[in-house]
Length: 233
Image (cartoon, rainbow, N blue to C red; front, side):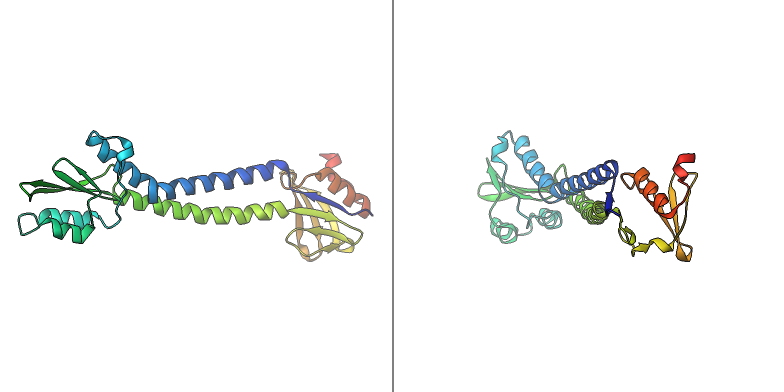
């Protein structure tokens, strides 16, 4: 007997591939927003409020956090000076008029100077807060894990096949089954063909999973002398 191999159907392959691609795309989108996109949007929001060009958006300083910013804002009038702020955050991200802005991932601290002294300190949350960004990252991590699982499933689908040889049948993921071990073949109500083998097990031959189900079933029935269940369907 000529060895014949039947892989998975195009429909199943395409559906699995599309699912993997979609999960990957969403994972990348959420992680991008969580690490870069939302922070960049906040910086762009600040320059827009100041009437500046978007190209003047500052680089985000990860040292500038909401907790530290509000702490400094609440400390104004108690000996706070520019040196204290620079020790906490480094140089200002942006200066505009008499105000200096320290831009962090979730917002910015504005420090207004008058007469060489600090007159006002205020923390402002950006459009996308640090909490928003954390949730984007959590969702991105979850989707990345789902992507790994989906990719594993996709690789199994790529390898799915039934191979018919002189010795018997090999089904991907199962030990080979010799011709003598095959005891019957039936067609279920769902249209799935079941191949009965020794030990009470069965091999499901679903037209959604395998190409050429008619040929597979016909070859088995011819070899074993079974009535073809598909002829009566």
